[in-house]
Length: 312
Image 1: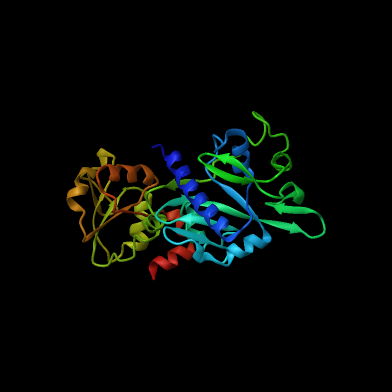
Image 2: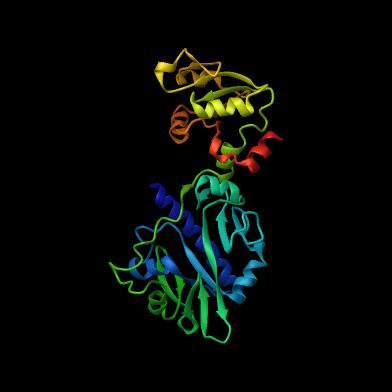
């Protein structure tokens, strides 16, 4: 199954859980934004879309907000009060990864970073007859009693005047015009690995490294910075590099070796740290070798707040 198909499968699973809770608790909700547009155009996801948006009037939204316990394992309802400071409710699935921002910003943000659907508030603007939806004003009367509309294998709630809602959100939206400026929602996602694995891979390389033999993959400037700032007193055995012209030479006082030797050297008493701008490619190389227990050092990531934590 293609990665995008698996991502959408999990989002539909989350949406189904959300629908079940709303039906059980008599909560009002509607599909909005790209999800509503996809339902009207395609009876499912738009070809470029990779997320799901729903919205709830304030009364239903606030009721849901106060009952995190309605979603048990493997689901987690993230609220603006939780770590990560999400501006709205996000229903997430544990054991998955979905970074909406780049790696640096994601780590700074913190909190749960699993695959999610967005639950937005429909805030009524007092005495105006309008809702406020993501900085857009939409006629309250356009929503009314939800009507059912097909979205993939599910039936979802649509505003009673959904074409007028879409007109207010997107202007002229009939195919093929309208909303083509929408870009993929996620910067990176993994449907089978918990986000904490990635966060730890990029931030936890020093934690628990006491008395462990350390191997560095990369023999350029990032390795030099790591050795200078963090290598003192560490049992650094050697370095690896994919440039065969560097093998059996030295850099920064360390011997450089062929990466094919890594599998026979790495064990529970050692730690492999990738220190290279090519960390994504090296990570794929290591995983093709069957090595998933590795860490990544990015010197640009360690602004004072992170560098201070690592040195403690």
